Length: 274
Image 1: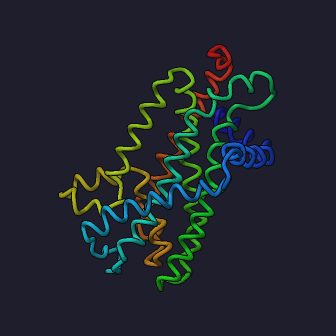
Image 2: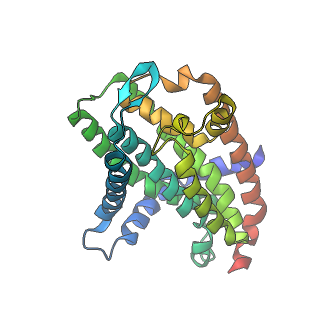
């Protein structure tokens, strides 16, 4: 438990610096672009249009049945899933290489390395919040208005950031020791795009209760469906599926414990990998 408290304490002690550095990183990544950080919004929107054209228009996707029999328009259903997936994918990719790409800088600073993965995550969080605002506007223009279930979004934002940080603690440590881990993660996440309920309802392609239960062990499934329940206003997802909520947090805590122990064990030796 000491490793967990150490990591959590470091996040709170350097939270202001974390916010400043994440903002600086977002700006520095796009400083040479004419449109600047607007490209961070344009890129995922273009991807959404491509997937909608391929899976929605060409294949003439019908409405998707959600909880309580609600029929969600496919384009809105897909946009909601892809929005959260973009945040997850970019955060994990950037988080996994966040330490080894900054080793030279960190060797000259008295700065806790456990904060570095969170800097990458928070820089993507700003983008995610901007896209979320655009999606909310799109939903309201389409006739699906703001509802009481939006309160859940605060919970799912916290849950998503917590899970991403737990995973990034593990992958950023392993990627510093073995650079191939980053490439393996990239390939694995691309696979998760197609076995998660992002582009299509997984129940349409994976038949059998046992197989569907296995698919739902993917914690991203919980987050994506929670976002959809909030934006479409169908249910209090984390309450109605309390067993899934308990599983999600148990898994997140286990991953966080593993990540904290790995990080503290090896971080004194990170500089040796320069």
